[in-house]
Length: 592
Image (cartoon, rainbow, N blue to C red; front, side, top):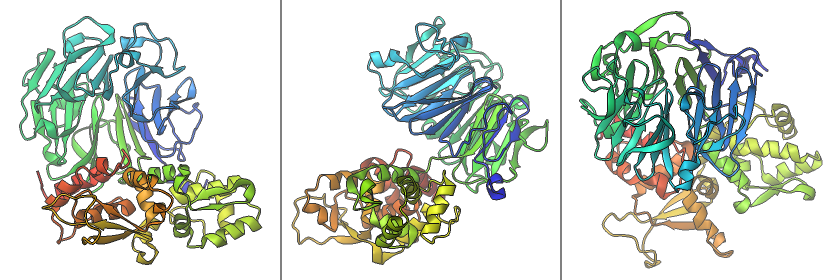
């Protein structure tokens, strides 16, 4: 491993009460005797107690890194994961279909949502069949200390576990099976050792319940709250809360315009304000916060300018045992803050990592696996591997015929070609030795940090000559589109690469799948979304760059309105950054 690679780890984890930040050659450095399994850009990491973490690696795979057991791997063959959550000795896993799985160390702390205690000792993921048997689809999960929280698609909120101090929001006997707490709920929020719950109702009201001795429920008092009680909000609307985490002595929330509010005991949580109602953190008022995470005693935040701030109990990686009552800027040696960075705080831990939540790479990985639209192949007749001409030529600056000729002459193996294509489509470099061999045979320079998919797609966007397809747009805000309109009616043309539409949009994939063989040769297609030319042009550029960029000629309000449903309408990746990009525009132009 080169010095350059060693200086840029993908994961930094600080664990136990000292919160000492560790980094070890791009590996996961929890405990010295745990196998140093390489963790490359995980989708999410959550920590239970101080002896294990759960890592969401890819769409349906998980890894448990345990102090005593080493690394255990799990997979959901027929499911795609949408979220994971941690308790003390239990993890919950939510799939995109609304199914919930539990992974646990026995039935400790009554966190396991089953009739019978689970004594699997981390052996397997176990489906929470309480919901599947009742045909209940779950859209959000959460965990506190000895509690599980579930929000169903229909707005019903369920909970199970300990009922001490009212931490589920309803006075009932302690139990393992979830019970319904209330209905008409839009979001739920909890946190490590939070000892309570916050819920936002569909009528835009915020409620909380649980332990309140440190004033962290925002209710204006210090009495424990046995049942859900309305929280008075000042300076923000409940519907604008994007994250709310409750710790041992404090609660902290982030709004969609980047403001941070906190309440609770200042001496323990370090937010600097001893208050029993949510108060904006003064030191961050001039900052736009894009990421927030909170642990039992500490908080971390990333600003729009990519600065990392921390406050609370011993958050500094360099200053030792220091309590920061106010947010301080933290510099991580050899670990620059980027837009792909994620932060997650456990009970007494910090996890900072670069994420695989890159929808461009994810889209092209799926596009590579989907052979329906392939238009060429590589390899000998024994193992012809289908692929797409334009993306190969874009990535290599070589003609497809020349690539194929070299592979045939060199008797390239199937493994070599697949390794090469994985780099072409989504930048995978897991087998750098084999990849360098292929690069050498093609007389290409193997420079991992320069040969990025994103760079080539931006270059491709500016290459008008290679665009082989057109979207036809009728810019008419007053009339609805008629798919059987006169062929002579004027449409404006937006040039694009066909494979970009196929890779990035499920809507266009469906359109092309439904064409007959003769129709598949067409070089243009009409867009009947009713969106303006400006909006479609911005969306197409986003397909290449993953960024929304407005000029003085654009109407930001119109763009926001027209692209607000684009993720759903054009069937984009569920991890699409389009929503984040639109939120940045909203903040930039101060649009409510």
